Image (cartoon, rainbow, N blue to C red; front, side, top):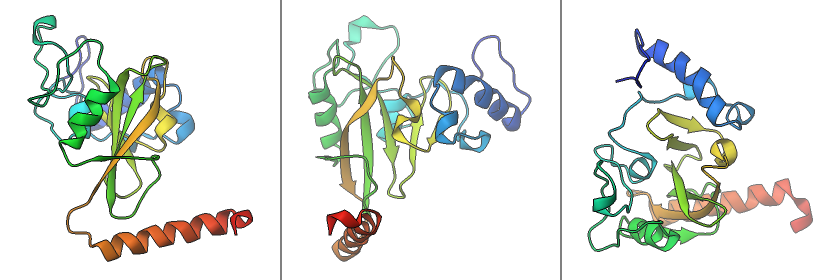
Length: 197
């Protein structure tokens, strides 16, 4: 269902609309290589970016107190509902999904990652996910899901910047495969920066 006052004939029409509208709100998108084919889902209010990072496309996630919104937001049982949201609460929520905090958003073979964007006050604002292939995706508010070619592609005053990162093992990937991937990444960095040798 499109936003109020907008109609689309088909999926291609919706993608054209999103490609025209999203870069107006996320000024870094086009400079990061965003194309019409990077629009990956239809507009929906059924879930938000936090739910999308958690792979839950059935309900929006946010630790908002139940009494402060007419709209229901899921938050893991046992974690506080708070306003404003805190980074510690987000880290605990994703630890419950098997993620552990890591240094950065660089691709690591055998791991999927999430990035938590924060405001200047270090309050969570947005999340993106990387499913182990080095490509980041996120849901932009009630708008579409997109493939973003860099973490800074969706950085804005409202979304802040990607500052906290978490990773978890991809099931079915052996420790040996993860080690091979890690060694390949180290050798790649050494080739790119011979001064490290």
